Length: 321
Image (spheres, rainbow, N blue to C red):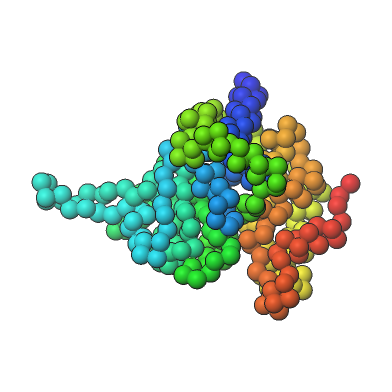
């Protein structure tokens, strides 16, 4: 039965979160966001200072989920063909054959994506939106599922190329990986003292507990999660409020509103409910909308943060009862 498959999928994805926690401590909201992105076939932008386990997080997901995973270290000299692949001349056959790049995978870790020039960043745009790459005019489909998890450092700007709004909008979620609390950091150090090796996740006990079939079943179950017209109206009101905020130069587009609808339904299903509440919308508004808003220069000079603008909007937009 579809219901049984959905329950099995929810159980497997819950187990996946526990497996990732064996390697990554104190990042539960980020782990939950990654699961939502995988369920929704969406891409994720992970932002945090160096050393907060952004790369380890993605590697742990690759180990706990039965998918192919590859990593690309984005550098200033990285070329588009290094990501998508290129035609290679075969002297034996006197013909050109296509050599796939690392983008042909299920889970692509784009490490420090803002360190590569826009020309290479744009090579990911088609892959992220169309789930294909075009080489020499021929489109080549990517495997299913295909999710890009990109990392960037919010502090260091020297030698970086900020992502354009068009590419930021292709990320379903922007998750902020924070420095762990004191107790969590003590746990991290204790694990290292006990011999934890970030390069050997198998030794840490991280096992494959979920598969693409679980993601497919979960995705089908999310479509049956009910959302009332009042909650849909609430999502629209929140997004429209970002467009009229005096601190915002570029508000959330209808694509962003659709993304918030999708992520709220996924979170409701993961929480074991068959309907979406306004609290689901509030919980996902930050990760889903923060990167789709551009603040006015004067607001940035005054130290206004996107998250604080969103919090103010959520506090003022009437919540349906």
